[in-house]
Image (cartoon, rainbow, N blue to C red; front, side):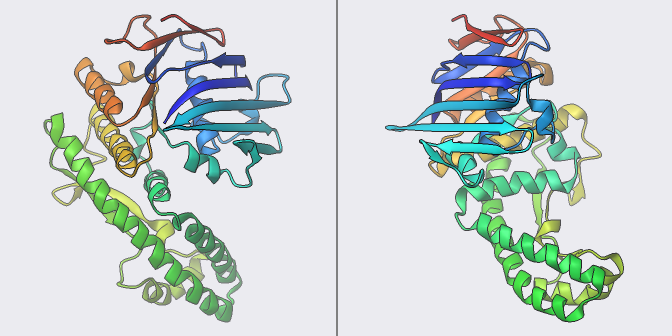
Length: 352
């Protein structure tokens, strides 16, 4: 898949932006604050339904505007895809190929985006929540039933937590019968994907990451006993005391270890960035193998890596995606023959 046309209106400092990116590598350069990251953010938001920079939609709407709009056309094989998203301070509206979209997950499934940005190292050093989101996004794209199972489980979990706070033992019993099998199902989906992810991650590390090849991944499903039903039962008193369910797939994590020990506190920031890049590129490669061609976004990559690793990440990105977008501050920062766009004061002009 590759994007052939993008239009953005009233998104941060981008008043009206419209241009045609090209197949392969697209390079956007300009001074800090020119709107390069906002450009990638708008595209990411159209795919994921949320920003990677803020949780507030108000921050995304240009000053004195009522809403923002993002629209694109893309080619997927012989087919043309059209996606659009409009968001005000209170409401959103999305369309796919001229039809209203009820769930934003429809946009995510249609337009897989892999993003690498300056905070991506949090995949290694950050909380389990970020790694769960990373894992679940990959599972979502290969397991059609995953999202529905996750929604059902989340509703049941919310009800169980409420019942715990009110001490409603009979309600908790009935909910455990519902969420235990759902939790097992979610974990099975994750485990299948995780096995492929682990193999690809090892391959990415082995390619050219001296000193990091012995880092491995371990999947923690979110409970320690054989079955979730057993874990919920044995932890009942503790859950009642805390008013929260402490066991289940909502507590899962992807653990990065060396010789059985966590590495996130021992790796340098540069090493964390290299490991995070391998995680993200592994996910892009698995998407490609599944027949889903992702678009890869690389924000300010040159400032995050030395020249050797910069070239390596870029080469790998181009090998597993038909289209790569990269931002930078230098006018001639890339080798080869990329499409080059100058970003200045919220405007985008094609240079080459």
